[in-house]
Length: 201
Image 1 (spheres, one colour):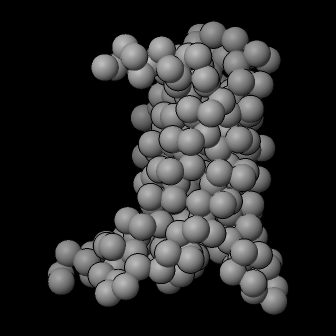
Image 2 (cartoon, one colour):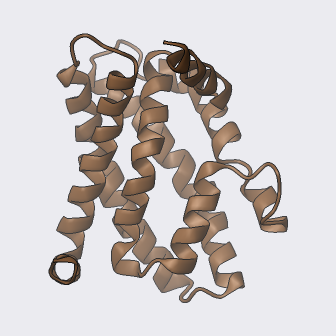
């Protein structure tokens, strides 16, 4: 079964990777709604997240990861760190920006930059910007989610599975982003407070 699945992914890498990535990203929104105890799921919101995920994030991730591998082939320490630095300084801010503005656009907000202005910097500096510290020490206490996940991705995952791996990580990331979009301020502190409140229920 697993061999057949991997063979399918190798035969149709773009379709397979983008489909899995998009479904997992949209699933992050559903998870956030379920965890919030919503009595009725907002399928319109999930649709909007899915459109952004399928239309941009999945495709961008697939093409970006291939570009990085061609430009910096292999998984030596120097190549992995180069890919990681570029990923977190170029791709991460772009992907986060597209999420906030894309969902706002699909929701028909008058100012599609409003959420981006309020939340982007918090989201980026708290969850992405530890890359510089990460490059100096893998054991750095400031290590955050995406730098660590992408380090594993570039080091251990074959190229044809990297977007799917990123999609699995994006499930957790999308849950955080959807929370930030609806209730949070883009910081991990707000997300952790939300999780703490869920445990009390």
